[in-house]
Length: 249
Image 1 (cartoon, rainbow, N blue to C red):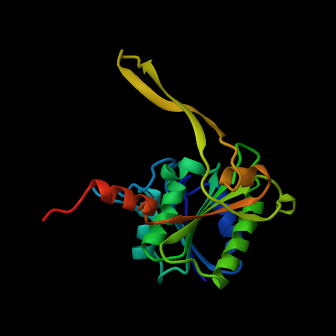
Image 2: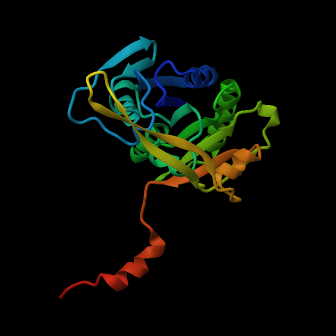
């Protein structure tokens, strides 16, 4: 298969390299990733300045754009044909719960789904001591499964992998998004010239322990597989709001 890889950790990310090394043994693999880390840029597309592409080595490219830019440029300009599969990752750290709304890793897979290409985002749930090679092998397993069982239209998968050796993982668990408990704050500081500047941050390591969620799966040693949809419509709410907003004459 022809596979396109991207990420939001940057072209020199260890997770991206580990994934390419595993997949290129059986597949034709192209890489296009940001030239630097672009964490939490979500689904930003660059429209108001030119983008540059640099060939790092054969079939490996960096760009000045966002993760979503990378996928669009890869599909439209770099690859010899339409890819069979797009993989974004392996991210350095988890992307679970509400984090998927901020994640550049998830956004790259979403862009692939927008283009009608089977896509997954992959993250390693760890803060250090990363088992990237094990996570890459798990990703290869997922690709093998999906090559036989195609994704439904307008669906892409968000994968989170526990940071343990492959033989210690308990298997796969199909999950829904959980709920992270944020303690965000804005830190105000003063620069050497007396001007104010701000850091946005906080502790986001806590979450609600609910069965069937991505957080619960990782906690129990399972690989979390969460199907995400491109359609944000709240189907259960349509009937409610039809009662409030009625058509005119």
